[in-house]
Image (cartoon, rainbow, N blue to C red; front, side, top):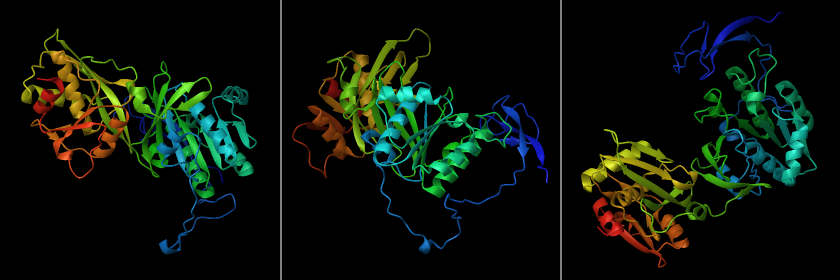
Length: 457
């Protein structure tokens, strides 16, 4: 029987489907993104079938057996932390990042380390040849006995190769280059990305194969393709950093097997990515002693406290409306804190342009950084430097009060470990835990009190 063919129009931004062309997508509002695609009524309607021929069936919940499979740890402890303790067999991991940031380098190193644990690895590349991968592997010192390189973009051929080799780990670099022969749209379109990811998900879940997928990002920094791509996978990781600097940050934004707030910090070197064991020292190593508009906060990234410098620069505004610019910080949070300082601490900031950033390229968004932001703003405004051995933790309310924060004990211990002599925390956080002797803990109730003790008003 001949296959029935018809056409549909698919939005390349969100995946919305329509039987007719429209200039503006009614789902996401994008203009001129509706592309015509051929719909093929495929005869293949099989359920999930593993390579051994096992077909998925409905089971009673009490009859489902749980296999105690341990996570596979790599030599990169930062990657293990972000993944929740290691690589989970049968998981589907999506890694996104800007071009040239080091996604392929990271996965090539991870592939070699997984191969050294005894696992068979298949590295599928749709963007490079086998010779190019070999050249990079030689530069990184990567080698392995059961490490296969497969330059291919045809998803049906990739599935056959997986069935022949039966690896424990598969790397897809990248999902936007893969294509299904049955779909007439170009590689990288919404339909292609959706079908290829669905195929890889079936392979991973039915055969207990851990699959890593590289995804391109848009100019806004989001993963290219339909939003449902992130819903289909188990873990979504973003590889961030400036190509002109050597430091890279691996951030988990979704993880079914661990915390979604963990970050891993690496340094790009000639021999590949090296993990940074003490990121707090990295973020503070270039801090100027006694500089105006500088403060240090102990922020929590997942289960680990990290000390980060927050910098502020205030200058008189030239135009009528003052400008507020924030890098690595939430713009709305900065505006809120400046309004509290003006109302509760009598600082005239409405005629001041404010520029704030979190040093080192890290992004902070938790409430505990409020006090450090306020101190840095007041320090720049009054042109009084903070003490280099001071650290600040606390959330600021609209009435000027300093509110309690979580994980206070871990934050204080991290500051004491790095040689800070004084730390400002909410007064309500004092009590119920043992204060360390290496650091002086100062409890504050209001923003006015904190400014007076920190800047000597």
